[in-house]
Length: 235
Length: 235
Image 1: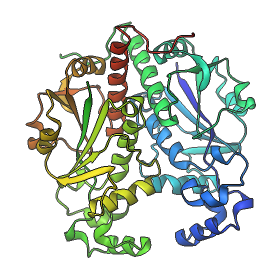
Image 2 (image 1 turned 135 degrees about the vertical axis):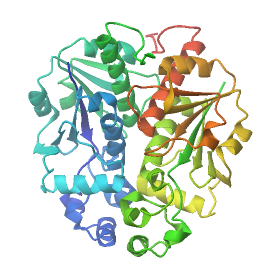
Image 3 (image 1 turned 60 degrees about the vertical axis):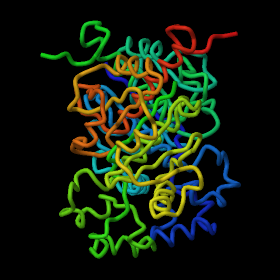
Image 4 (image 1 turned 90 degrees about the vertical axis):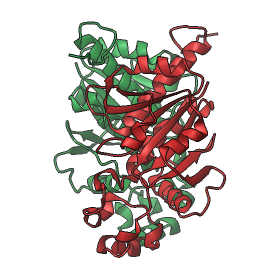
């Protein structure tokens, strides 16, 4: 059993061509000494330029995507190879994080890697990039059950959700990689179920951390023959 | 009931005076246009300068501290005022994160705030800074039980630990804010108990996310009169 998590419609993309000549982007490019077309779009620096951008409220938050990924790739479940992570971006790029890849906790290093990878500079075998929608990601995963997590879903406790997920052979969970708004209709269509795991809206990185933790507890419980605790016992 | 979490001996400090004239620090200062003495020490940029620094393996990882804080201040428990967060740094500064303070998810913004605060620029009422040890933090919290989380502790499941914590009126958990090594003897002395929550060593940000999540589940269970799930029911 392996769980795949897709961070969907993620707010991670290069500066789009229509913003390349804006003052905010040009200043940032000059300050950083990086070509504008090879920089990540970032609300923190390009806010004024982004105001007229389509769905701007969902875009330009690489910081959020970074922390979300950190909360998955630092877990025992990922390190044990039982968790596979994909990022689908707002502008339909797909990043497949290869097993065992340790992404940097330093945002500045992460930014450098993402800018290289999205500019076609290659992922050094650690991140595979191609174009595609969430549907295309699922063609690769071939899951037997797909669940989306959203405030628009039906309420379900995360322990219950993880029990369902982990009862499948090849389950997939989809987490939104954006700060505001909801999944697109196109993304919603691929899901077998849409659930809301908390009465409060949760940020993507909190959802990712909790989802993986509950799934991991479930795997360990199953591995230890149905015991309640996964904690090691004194020898 | 309120849980206090102290991120202790955190790898967050300004460049120490003995490194101000090193090439790595001077180059970084020039590139950023920030006075060297007002920059955060960062392994990503100052590695070569740090090699001879005392306990260098525990220092200069503001990225790690940032993600650890994000995993606490984005949670319902924090937003409900049931979680209080302190940072104690390697060089004995204490940062008290005032209730309701939203720290930025953008690392670059976080760095700017921390550099200002640690340089004596004031925390705009959102972060209170003073000198002191972990013992001094506890003088402020006045906890009735203090638990440290460490690979050197006795094995205990996090659900069990959270049950103990949340049975107290004013419990405190101490998480190490450093990438390698262990708590100092001074920090260990203030703890009533030292526990290890996973057979594998976990990074600080993963520990923080899981600790708060389990504590939060416990609070909600108690609030709802002992019910098993905290998920909202259809009306």
